[in-house]
Image 1 (cartoon, rainbow, N blue to C red):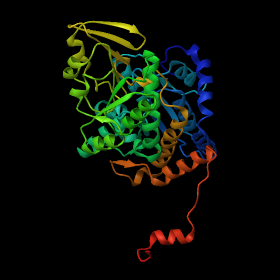
Image 2: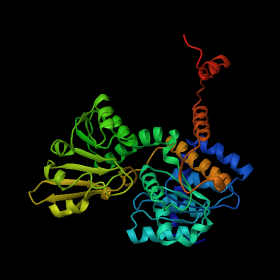
Image 3: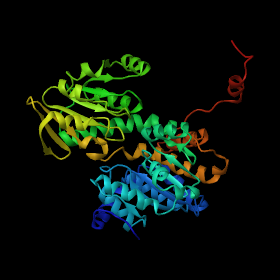
Image 4: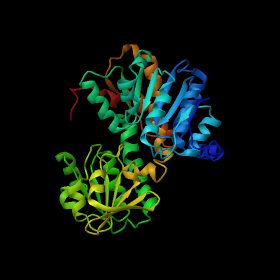
Length: 418
């Protein structure tokens, strides 16, 4: 079986960590048990470009249980857990192409190797797999039923492709499911981003001025967690509605050019490029820490930082010290890549349980319904979202009320009032 991982000897360690994650993923476990019986993905070839983590391993196991033939590559050069990649190859027989710290050339080579499966379904996180297909491997498009997309950045790219009329097959935006973005983006990103910064720096959050650029669901989560740890949180935004929401949530809101002079720690979570620019770097205080938790390493203008600096050195794992010509130092974390996966382990299993349940059920939905779909970006069907929420509550031992027939009738009527 052709694969490319760092060290197959790490597999046993990875297997134990995969088992540890599985115990907190009851929704995915239930789907796997059904998939084993029904085989809804029998005969489907599925290429996945995802963060290679313990949770992803459990998703791959579930897809295989459903009958799919699966190949996996990394969706970010720094997000791979090498022991997990080794275990996927040795214990799960999943051809895996991922090495933590791989260079850009290797990253795209691995995407190409993953596509050698000639997939019927793609499963993406950031849309690099889809864009590579459309740019370099159009010969494979005729085999495709459809795909799924995990994250905000990827959905933005795919919707742009659909608007321009260049998207060649249907995609389900898993990111836009309620059971994904309300929990994964908010609680998962909130906790794991702070975790990554702490592992990289061992800095005290309490009392720090922490600047969060972007107040989408990820930014809300980071701001909430930082505030809970005692930080004084400043939010920067370009959207007036989100800026107003951040203000009413109790955060200071101001332009980045003003926040740059105040911040001790800066975190970007916008999904856009050039958010922290040369102008901001020139204003930052000595010792400022800069990190990104958006999908791509474009949110921080790293070339501008290098241009301003007279020297760069690696001072800790995942911490680069840029010394500016005026003597001030700025610390860049994780090469500007996803800090929660570069320096930590990504989202907790409990929240990825719902995200990857969405992936598994969306792949099943695509396999069954692709002939009815156009080359557009579709939401996760509401029935799937509600099923996952119900299963998650059951897994947590929580029951909820049900509407009575009279209540259902009232909600459907326009004639019944006071």
